[in-house]
Image (tube, rainbow, N blue to C red; front, side, top):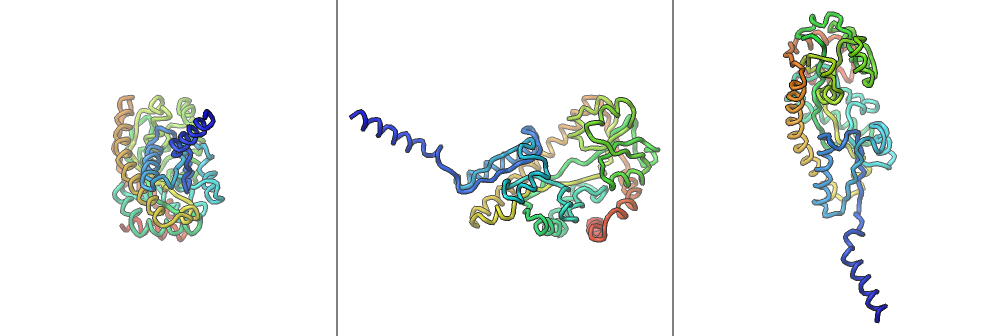
Length: 322
């Protein structure tokens, strides 16, 4: 009798707990470089919520922030090998698809509206098509990145105000050539060395989005944020084409619909975050300076167009014509 009771109790427990033992039909391993507080990760959490709810649990999304699956390039390679499924990536895609270089070309875009028109139109379609063809990654949606701004210990409103400013730039030849053309003395340097180099006056300025200016506490060694907005860029949320197409059409649509919700959610967070960043840096003593961006763009143009190959230059000219 006791044995029958125990057996029945165990069977009931298994039935009651079956939902915890149930496995999804498909699992999406979504790795990226941002931390849990970053708006990209918050958007990824929204995507997970939408996919799992609207697939009725048939798709499980596992999130791996903080480079848990490796660097951006590591995760891309893992997706191509089938050991990861999704990531957030930017101009690194140009290693396969040269048109993706447009994602970070100085003064390609006049403002956010101009960039959105390009990304959402035929130019964006052209870039995405090459990304899919060359990488086997499918862009599901895209996020706007904060524009890169110039910090220094003096106000800089025109290129003439640069006057040989010793400026840290990432080790990107296009960035070096562009800042030289605008009158600065660019020095490639690892970002980890920037704070100390500014503190010791080895360099006099640097350029980055407001989010990095804040997180690196550059307000402690720089007085001005000169709003050059010289690089406006975006990043894609991508999924492996094989991973997407192995799912039935209805679940593929669930993933695509969730990506649209994620994009709108992240866009709202982005606007709020940019406002917060400007206020936070102002409160920490930095002064924001309006810049003659049109003159900067004119000065940069010859260096930019010379650095691009024929395919990229045609795309750049199409963007400028919008």
